[in-house]
Figure 1 (cartoon, one colour):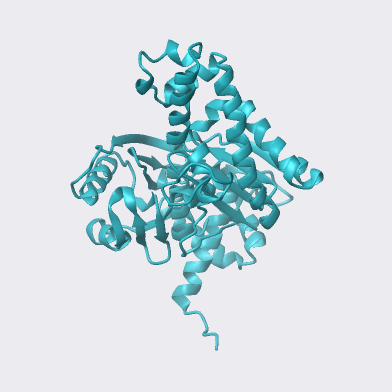
Figure 2 (cartoon, helix red, strand yellow):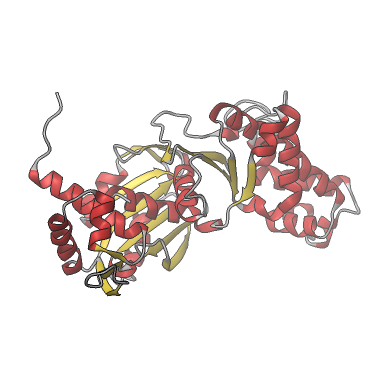
Length: 395
């Protein structure tokens, strides 16, 4: 049986409703807000007075008269509060301070030491302390994108191998120390939310973000809602089979997408190509084959290395196979790629698209937009900020 909302719950709901309405449009009058929210003018007036007193909104002048007294217009004060977003990456922790519009006010990176044997939570605390010291307005919350498998509803990192965490109550530990709301999610989920909220896809109901790097995963937005799974899959498309009897993957299977399209696999393949091809442009950037790194791969590719360009087409083919499954099952029409593979540009996108046409109905493949993210390395921390806005302010 449904219980009637308490007076406090109703007040909180109405306050969020008014704030969300002001957030969605600039220069609204109290009458506009009442019409949009279906709240009474008196209720709106009282809530607006509270929000002005709390510093969330301000009066910005008068609008055009429609026969009576010109209405007073209201705007959100974007820097009234701050949000912290953190990306616990494999090689670096990246954190940012955001205003209520998602604008980055400050950003830092902290390298994660190789062969880290210490307490990784201490490193997280250090990173948070550096960010807190730079916040210029009260915080409404902190969002964290973590690698591995997370239970978002409970705030638990179920497994993050690189951090050494298993069934780790990250949210509980951080909230006890900092006394501010903490929200965590898998980094690919954060990436999808960041792209949907701040990457220009607000008007598109369905979206998949494929996050590439040492691992490959997908975050999904369906019907304007972030899809959150508490089970072991969590968008791990890096372990979709794309090549029969292919190379051994770290998961124990052969031919997974990560064995071809992860950054580590790309570097290893480049070393093989360099050994096989004395005329490879990779030799222009590396004195020895074993010195080849990802940046050298990009430089050689951009310099026109034919073997690398052919291999990029194979990478695109592999990603196209995995993406085709997503499009076929979820009926999404926007696929966004995020990560270092953006340096491969149109050659990679063309190969993905070609493979999709080959494997799927032509009309569906042609209607699916594939693009690189404009948020680049900030996609996870912006998604973390968006998650805080959603939970704490109902945005």
